[in-house]
Length: 139
Image (cartoon, rainbow, N blue to C red; front, side, top):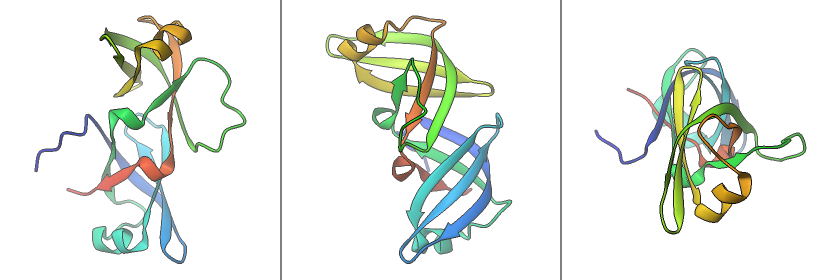
């Protein structure tokens, strides 16, 4: 199956914490970063997820926010530090490519936000992704 989602990050499940209807799934990405996905318990069962399972974390590029300053007091669980490696500016939007060790993420943000953040190739940024915006896939 091919997907249009640009951000497809390979990793391994480190923990599954099940609640009534939802579960949080800890994933260690190939580059060593930790990610949390909040998915339904039904999805956990359907995918057969448990510690050690190989997965791909899927995140739409429009669901990745970027920060250039402190991120200490945020409810967003996934904070992945990286470096801007490419910026494609359009009339209204910008596609910002961020490299994190062995992985690359694409964030699509407004051109205005990219300019206000002062982004350039080589900028240090933190990619922010809500755990509810992370989908998981198995092979």
